[in-house]
Every structure is written in C-alpha cells, then in structure tokens.
Amino acid sequence: MNGAEFYWQSIALQQFDFAGREALAAAVQALTLQDWKDYYERVFLQQRHSLQVVAPGKGASCPGATFMCITPPRPSSTGMRPT
Image (cartoon, rainbow, N blue to C red; front, side, top):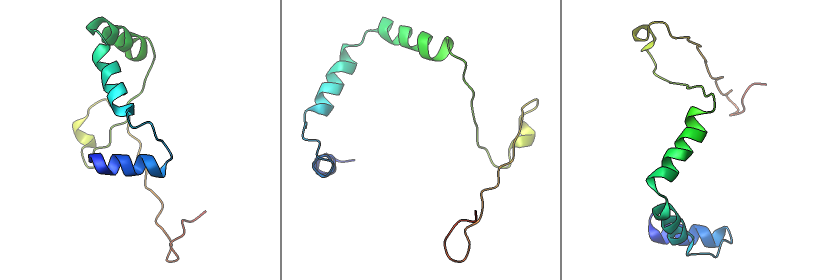
C-alpha cells in the first residue's frame, strides 16, 4: 500500500491518527533482542501449535506425514454456494 492509499483508507475508516505508522515503527525499534527472544519463547516454544502446509501434488514427497484432502465446493450456476 503506497502512502496516499494508506491515508485515503485511513480517512475512509475514520482513523485520523496518521502518526500511527511512525508510532508503531518507533515501538518496534525500541524492542531489544531480549524482548524478541522472550516473545518467541512465550508464543512459539511454550504453546503447542499445528502447521498446515498446502502443496498440491507433493504429498508423496513427505513420508510419515498426515494428509487430509479437502475439495472446496464448486459454485452453482447462480453463483451461490451449495448448502
């Protein structure tokens, strides 16, 4: 998103704090390496997560993995999804 687009979108959403990007940048720059390590430990290492990988046609190259084939419903001729 370019600068002008950001400002017009902010106006459309009635978000008039145009310094928000700069404030966010300043807050991120203020983080230390230890802050990032603590966050990583808390969010990624201490909590259990799952991972979904979408790789059409590549299932055979992942031995031992669990696979689930999901076929999205096709839209009907009216453009409505079947119920």
